[in-house]
Length: 626
Image 1 (cartoon, rainbow, N blue to C red):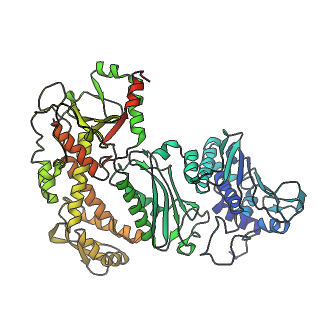
Image 2 (cartoon, rainbow, N blue to C red):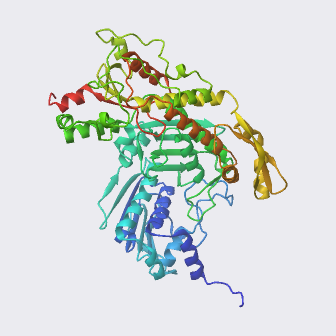
Image 3 (cartoon, helix red, strand yellow):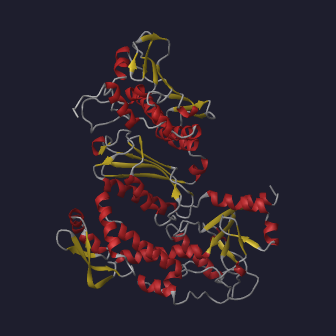
């Protein structure tokens, strides 16, 4: 078959297939154009989920007649000062969006520049342009897109319902709005309820926009992030581990103001929360990465959703380190939603009803059966409250002893009382009640510690809390020395592509520090001679292949350390105070003081809260006193 040049209309429709996937893609391109034009107010109107109508109006700089004539032609742009594609300082720069939209829909652009006496209008339908004509409009631009994909009707079959497409449009606008709090956004139309996000003012416009878009709950449960490393700055907000979601929809990343969904950033986020969040839960974050445009390539995807960093590990390390530092600084802060959920449970069921039915309540997650019926039997059949003078806690020599031995720590150190823990008399001293977690007053159902603060009550899950304490000490022990290794009687030979063997050889020293000793075994294999002693029953082949894949993608080896941390977390769970163990008041106070001194003690290794606080004012409202 002879080679021939494709027609301009076909070329534009092929380009449209790469840039314009659905109505939300059109919204993204048009709103980004408005932001680049310096708009301070952007209005978006849609109908039928954007299939029949999309209208974006802004009060930006507008275009002259000459600019408008070029704007609907491919690869015409005002957003590149020269032809350097590694100095991108705007959201759009390819010059493909408008001609792509015009090739598959009915496009009308009305715009007025301050240097023009009146506005100008141009229409493009299925790739066919109409002549420029004068129009009436104030400064700025209005772009109207009707009958999307009328020129390529097969594409319409792949669109979702009007409601789903409208929801995707809302999500696109949300992500852009979070990046530009100084711009006001209005989203309306016949297919939705109107949403208005006014331009944020004041000393902290980002925080104000967060409250508008993500919600006040997130603002109350967010940690501020601000870190710099080698010219890369990370700012924004990350949710407390106890404030999480079932999906990653509430994770917003920006690189130089551009909304992105970057695998490297997502990987760093998972690593930062690995110690404090269950694998099936997702943190809520809004994070901004700012760096020299020369050190990031935004030209790797037609829709500009992906980016590539020149030094990806620098960015990933900055993200992980900044969030982990913020988690430590957050100390005992716990999500306000935990206490709110507990109060909701009490209001819905009634404290009296719960007591009458023989049920208690656990953390903030609702009613649970009385612990007398649980597998963890109390040491003594009593009313369920621990009192001074009861036998001391015995952690046992099985799980706790194993954890202590492997970590190189005396078992007594895993539950040692703080030096300043004081014996209780008839009255609780005020200095203990002034502590963040208060003074222990009772143990309920051999599972929960109830303590009193100056202005409320704290309820602690003793197993979850002690699990975190043991885990942190095990990690410290691992960090103080090389991981103990176990030599294999017969080295395990793992076949790999030659390039993977080279990457593993380059990182052999780092892997040895984590307990894995390997060396090249010919051009297409590695021989594993020693493995971490803690990883019993290890699938060596799977581990090596995973490490090779990780090195190929991120040029780092974090998988082994994460597996070791997972083993330490498992040992901590088995070596901790179990539910059903009776504690003396002194032991309870010692646990509270250790929690106050231990980073990340607000949640266990699985991301569940270790304690909740009920303010006295909340309790008084429950009883109608306020």
